[in-house]
Length: 399
Ligand code: 3PG
Image (tube, rainbow, N blue to C red; front, side, top):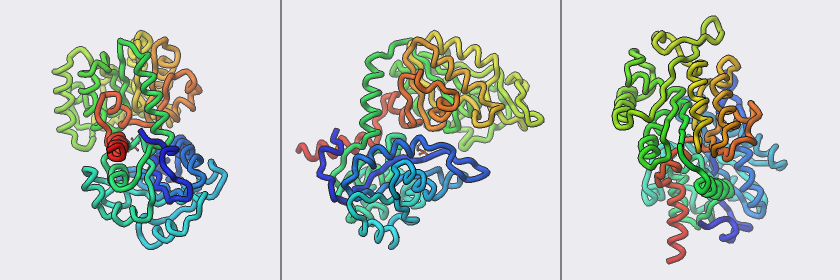
C-alpha cells in the first residue's frame, strides 16, 4: 500500500480525509475528548510542505453530535501549535477560494462533510467520482491521502470518490492500524471473546455473524443497546426498546441465537436510574419506562470471569454510560478485567479509548484503536471500502 513518501506531495494541494468524529456533550455541544483529532494531526505534521485540505465528518444527521467543525479546527490548531484555517463551507465559493489561496505549509479544515447529502450515502467508486461533492472539489486537489480508518467501512464519496480520480496513498493512522492488527493476528490465540456494547447496533449485528463464522468469537458478551435487542429477541424484555428499525434488528438477533445457541451471554441484571442514583435490578424487573444505563454487578462478575480466562479479548462499544459516574462500574470493571488478563487484548472505539484514559489502564491493553464499527468489520474479515480504494490505486499505477 502506498504511503505519503511514495507520492510527490510537497507544494501540492493534498486532500486529507481523516475521521475526527468525536462524542459531543449534549447539553453544551462541546467536544468531549480529543483522541481522534490528536491522531489526525500526525499525518498533518508529516505533510508540512504540502497545502493540506482536511476533510472529516462529524455525527449523524438529526443527532445532537451533527455539528460544524469550528471546534475541531481550534483543537487541531492547539495540538499542532499552528493555525488551522476553518472554511465554514465545503465546495461553495468560500471553500474553493480558501483552497485555491492555500500556501505550502498551510492547513485548511473544510466543514462537516456530512452537511452534503451525498456524504451520507454509499456509492461504488465510479459513482462516487461523479457525485457533486467530488466533481466540485477534485480539480482543486493534486492528490488524496486517506487516513480515516474509523470510517473505512463507509463507501462515502470522500472515501472512495477522490481516490478514483487522484493519486492516492495511506496516511499514518491507516498504516499504524494495519501494522498493529497484523502483529495482533500473529499472537492472538483462542478462546476468543468479544465484548459488544455501545449504541451502534446495526453495524455490530452485521459483523457478529462473520466474527463467529471466521472463528474470531467463541463467546460474545453483550452489553449496552445491543444487549437489549437480544433480550427482546429472547422475550426477557417484552416491551419495545426504542431503537431504529427495531423489528428487523430483533429478528436478526433471534436468528443469531438460533444459529449459535452457545455463543451469546446476555446480562442477568442491569443498572437504571432511580431518584438520580444507580439502582440495580434483574432484567425480569425492567418496565417500559426504565432506561438501562449499565450492566449490573452479577453480570459484571460473570463477564469478568470469562474475560480473564480468554486467550484473546476484543471489546467494542462501552458496556455502560460511563460518562456519568453512577454508571461507570460496568465499563471500568470489564476494562480492568481485560487489563489484568494474560490474553491478548484489543479495545476499539472513541468512547472506549476515552474510558481507558479515565480509568488509567490504557497502557495495559495490547492494542487500543479509536475505530469502532470499522475495526469490528475488519476483524470479522470484511473488505473495507477505504482499504479497497488504496489497493485499487496501487493496482492502477502498477499496470
Ligand atoms: C465511527 O465513529 O464509527 C465513525 O466515525 C463512523 O461513523 P458512523 O457510524 O456514523 O458512520
